[in-house]
Image (cartoon, rainbow, N blue to C red; front, side, top):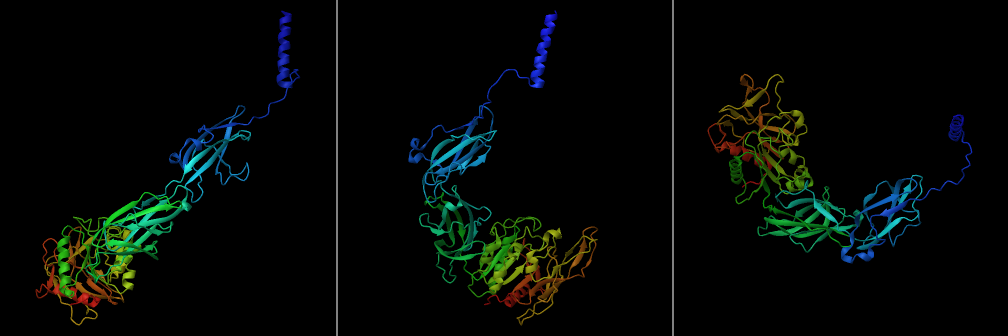
Length: 544
């Protein structure tokens, strides 16, 4: 019993000595050095060059995966590098990139202008003590130049029908990098003959060389302007077909002459034939009646045989109140430079709209008004027929370019405490206020033939505004239906003092029945038409 206790006590002392006091137990040896990790590639062959023929070469972008193992620790990271035989790394430690990934989509380098290359790929593991695999895993990838890509920008795609000024935008790319792109090639109606543009060009405008005095002209060259700044070039493309369907071809070409897929866009081109453009911006179902009336009014005024170009931007239209529809998709997506240049094609524009002053986002004229500067700089004249109406939310209409364009100072305002509207009763007087500048004949006095609730008067005060007509209005409260005479601004027609733009804010006909809404105070049905003719004469529209 005593011997057993003694033995247990001795063992306990020895164990305690080993743990706490580091007693010399008699064991000896040397600690092992850290061993380098080992790296493996998913590609087992040291070189793929001999295993593939030229047709089976890989694309320059390949998915590579790898792994590592360390028998006395763990893998902390990897380093990868790749190079061609013509451009090897300067030294064994050059060109490495660290990563913690175990796979990557790698763009392997192909020398600029070369179609084929054999690219060495190496990867080495790094363990938790920073030791690197001294024998990196490697393979040689036989790669070939990948073709570039090009795609039309949907945000700049032209409408289905345009005049002879058209813009296109695209996005070109190259798997080997943008520096490998050599050029952009474009053509019209011919997929074999191309004009070349610089590789960084991504927006162009085609301008057809149209001769209005040649009625037999059915095709022409198109000059190419680049960028949104409308920069001129010496490039011309043949075979722009007028009053016909056209197809625009475009492709990207890299420095090996490898081309992208040939892309195309087909649309219809109308030939500008007249100096007068009628813009149908009347966005209601019965708009055809309104257009027919105004075109007849123009034909009575213009020299005999004069044609008028028509541009329909009435779609989509509304069956209810105007101004709650999107902007017309017949307009170019961006006003500048396409719409600016298109409007400048014409010396005279006659614009008939359902609404222009109550919304920036939905109406067409505010969009076009931002780019009328070139039109007016070239001496352009414009007559606008549009009712004046107020925005539901004035803050959403701040900076409406149509209000700045038209010969008016401001929209009328109602007391904040009253929700009211204006209407013109039947036989309300429309009274001339000023002589039309540059015209000897006075304006005829007019009156309404029926009640009008679709228009309001406006403020025409200002040094460059000449009010032409005032009208009688009644105010009507929308709560309680009280009404009385309106004593605020009453102008319904005006012209700018420089005689470049006129505004007539009352309808001329009932769009449903075609009946005249205005007549002379003596019952003359031609009086309102004569008033418009006098405004056209003041603006300088050609007269018979």
